[in-house]
Image (cartoon, rainbow, N blue to C red; front, side, top):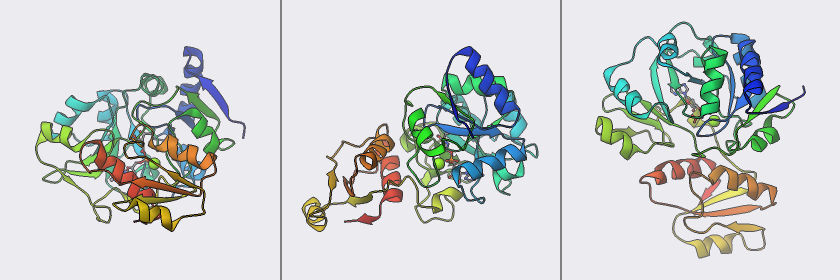
Length: 306
Ligand code: TXA
Ligand code: MG
């Protein structure tokens, strides 16, 4: 299959929106990472996403909407606490787990009776969804397991020849995925830390919990190894000297403390692979603010903790 990279001109966006409407796959920028989208009501289209990414079938997809009306079409109801979060953080990088309407292709929810849904703030994403006129199921546009794509070039590396269109909207703003929260429990629980901090959410709805890396409550997809570069990533909790000694003689990239941020993490991991490093030594950070999501991704990507 030929993959066409489109710039975000009105004509190209109209072409991409038509493709989505017709059941084709289109990768597009959001404010977090690039997603690879399909019409969420079209089973045949949604199935293509799993094939293109090599994604396990039991891992449900995230649905993107462009308006409150579209939201009303994909969920059964919006409880008051969810409404509060929506009013504060949408459009933006917060994903809510809500009771799913029967309108979605069953592959989207992987058989669950809930759906993960968000309204992106990226103008290209919003325009594309609005013009397609249907909710768009879109996981991150990477090959399953690899670091998520934050540029159109990253998407091309992973999905060239597997999808017909990529819309290039430049580098993404946050660089890391949305925060996923389930408000059906009390206290609400963050299933995946992300672009919006726990602290910011707690200012709106009070105390929330965070699902542990091995918790049964976390998002289904979190059980898989994720975000991982080809190189061996070693998370260094305290002894950098010991870590360096352990990999002496190898091509080692040593990240300085504070060098990796949510914004540049995935791009830097991909770059380290391109540069041919065998080992990446990454100092651990405190799990507060952005540090919570950063450590979540590093732990999931790490082969070893020293
Ligand atoms: O920022 C983002 O969230 C990006 C952009 C493209 O929007 N999307 C993204 O999608 O990260 P994806 O599919 O890579 O991650 C969605 C996560 C998966 O871990 C999946 O298991 C979880 O959401 N998920 C989907 N439906 C769920 C549900 N009903 N209950 C719990 N977790 C769910
Ligand atoms: Mg993903």
